[in-house]
Amino acid sequence: MMTNPNINIQTIQTKRYPCMLLDLAWPMQQKTGSRGAGRHYPLLTLDQIKSLPVASLADPDSSHCWLWVTNAALRYGYEVLEAWGFTPMSILTWVKPRYGLGQYIRNASEHILLGVRGNAPAMFHGQSSWFMAPLQRHSEKPQEIYDIIERISPGPRLELFARKRRHGWDAWGLDVPSDIFIPRFPVPTYTFSSAALAQTAGTLLYKANTATNNDTRNGDE
Image 1 (cartoon, rainbow, N blue to C red):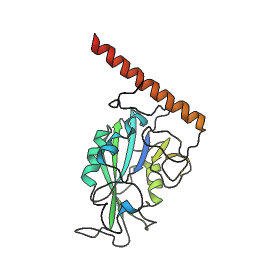
Image 2: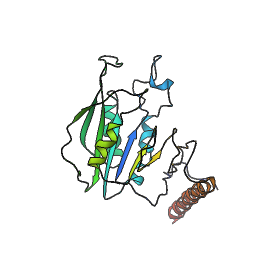
Image 3: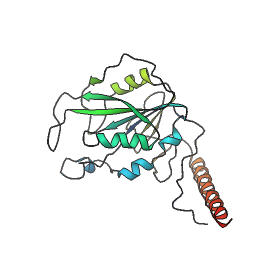
Image 4: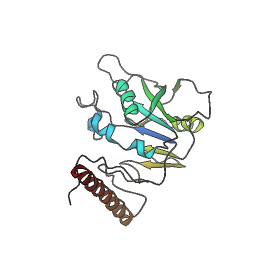
């Protein structure tokens, strides 16, 4: 039986994360030019970003979501956090040691937004709103951000769109063996077996079909 394409299929996870970190492939001002991000990795549309099952991965009662944004995507970052069910609370700025690109002003900074869901106080209150750190390879974020987050946000922690694995964190992304399965967003390798992946995908398909059948029956009543 075909599934209803309008069903929002979410990941089935027994684990919910009090802390998540995301470094998205924002499409704003990135598609053109020989040095644009689109040459390095596939970009997501704003609708694709909002459809990520971040809300279902987060602890519903107490969670932090750290979201990297470019200067061009800053306003959309607030919109995305709210679409995922988080209230934007703070902004942390990475000050870079040299100029980058920019259509109007050359960028020498990047930002990470902190969104909060439920009752989720910070563990540490001494962090300033900016930090300096060296540049990495294209679009890679500084390692210092992990130390900052680990001081402020409780675990367990999950990084989405991870470039490298951080000890003590779960991860998902194109460049790392991933600990979770997200429908419609496959990645090359997982930390669990292909049989487990097939079982997870089959369970998702069954639940989507069940929801579709229930909707049909309710509509006939």
